[in-house]
Length: 151
Image 1 (cartoon, rainbow, N blue to C red):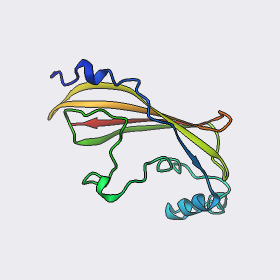
Image 2: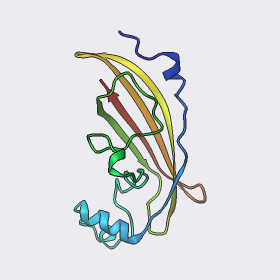
Image 3: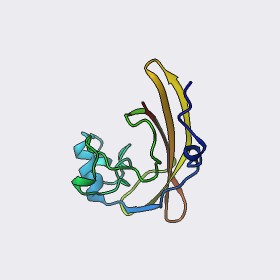
């Protein structure tokens, strides 16, 4: 196995992004429900956010020139890796509470792991980010673990 991960890259494990806070609105829930083809009235009426509503809620809003060629904004939590072609490695979501209009949610993102494996086409770098979403009073709402693979 190659050794792409030196101590300077591994030192980023545990790094946290600045917390982001967003207010959930009935209108945004309704727009998301319609755009994703939801059929349950509680979603279409905006009484409760459907699954995966939170995914884009905390994304940075950036101008076009700040996007990568594939339309993604640069994640400032991540260090510069020696491999750059990114692929999805997995998404594990635990819902602790329903998201409702009026909720003020704060997301805390942490880079929890970086490791290397050998694949058929060469070395692969894996990294994991855990996002904890909670209400103003600290009530947990969502725990999301994202795994990405770089080749």
